[in-house]
Amino acid sequence: MIATLVLAPLVCGLAGLLLPMRNRPLGAGLGIAGAAVSLVLTVLLLAVGTRGQFSSTWARFGDLGVTLTALVDTRALLMSLAVTVVALCVQVYSVGYLAGDGRYGPYAAQISIFTGAMLTVVFSGDLISLLIGWEVMGACSYLLIAHDRTLPEAPAAAVKAFLVTRVGDVGFLLGIVLLGVTAGSFRITDVLAAVPSMSGATVTAAALLLLAGVAGKSAQFPLHTWLPDAMAGPTPISALIHAATMVAAGVYVVARLFPVFAASPTALAVMAAMAGVTLLLGALAATAADDIKRVLAWSTVSQLGYMMAALSAKAVDAALFHLLAHAAFKALLFLCAGSVIHAVGSNLMSRMGGLRKDMPVTFWTMTIGLGALIGLPPFTGFFSKEAVVGALHTQPALWLVALLGVALTAWYSTRLWLLTFFGPARDASVHGHEPGWTMLAPLLLLAVPAAGLGIGALVADYELAHLGVELVLPLALAVLGVAAAWWGWRRADSGDPAAVLGKAGPFLASGLGLDTVQDRLVVRPVRALSRAVTFVDVSGVDGAVNGLGRATTGAGAGLAAWHRATLPRALAGVLIGAVLVTVTAVVFA
Image (cartoon, rainbow, N blue to C red; front, side, top):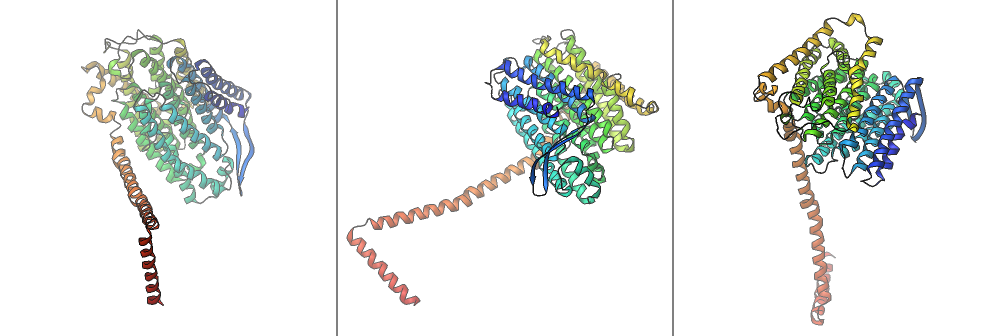
């Protein structure tokens, strides 16, 4: 059943690639069917309580074996539930959102392959098969971000995402090789069992190498810059990448291999520092962005920082709880943003306003999603974020950063809500309207877990003794952030609370200028080096080879000319040659 669960979207995706590009009905049907089959099987496995490890040998390389191993536990099944629900919603939503798209067939097929690759990562019990799923996701993200060929920024964003994540993936590959060779097996259970017997240096090196790959996939500082630019892709793809695949993979892999990281205090310290910077940087950048999708993208960066912070504090359950909650409300928020963009024809919040009455379903579902993102009760984000913040008490500096992030999250979320749905319409040509039911149905479905996913966890696992200052302080800061954004909105002449930021606004919206820093410290030197290498190759290596070729050709042409000479010249040449040979023989005899 696990094999069918993982293979269903992969097979449907591969079949979809064989269809004509414009075959929308069959392409959409295959995409929806693959996600639906995986979702049904996930629910069945959760219902019957199937757990365990299923393994068979795939290949052997000397003493090292590569296996097809599936690890099925509650964490994997819950993650699979999030992946398949979001994938199904994205497939259905795309039918309406990309109506008239001439390349819908490969688009739907690539989503299916993307989903199957993520499910491979989720259930993989072997590091090699995990790596395969990991890399296939990277390839699919490149194709999907670049889908809209009419946008000049889409190909550049796709290349950037591919290259930045590849930088981290080099470390990820080396970390897997180091663990597998040291443990004598690539099977995850064998690797984790061998961790206590490994040297501290080996474990630290492996953990840091794996963390490089995680930083790339999960958009952690300093490899986070690709994620906001990936908004050039279609909005449903943004929902898929930001909610249940790609960025979620890094957090999930750290949780799956957590004994490796837990055995290295150095790796945990690096993880904590990286998470703190990512959390704060993403929240600050979201406060001033005008593009509604970039606000949500920077929000994702910040929320991923919360998850990694919880992992650095060894609160694995809190991190995964927030990962699942985030999958629900962030997918909802991106799809709501897509409905708004579909109606307005622009991503810019400065062109929106007054859409509350014209788009009531979108308004209420997005309100639920923003409430969950802020962490207001009774929405799911309240419980998951409180669990993360509560787990950070062992790291005071990170705890303070997380509290500041709570206030900033409330501020930029409220700003987005007010600029989009309240006040007068800022563009007279814009008239809001609800999309069709293929786009509204996923919003209503995702609003349910966004509004109530945390209630069951509260009843089942929450300790009432934990309800004290640790709960009140984050809630108070969230309310303060909401109130500050409301105050700024009421006072600003432009109606934008970010006006109070003044000249700092554009700097914050640019991600604190880190793209420029990356361009000057990495991109320009690499380009200069490539130009130098090209010059040496063309003018030096190729020049020497081409020069030798020209000299040889010239010598051959000259010799050919002598052979074609008239008899007197030929005789003179023979005599001269004979003289030279005789003189040489006498001199060197």
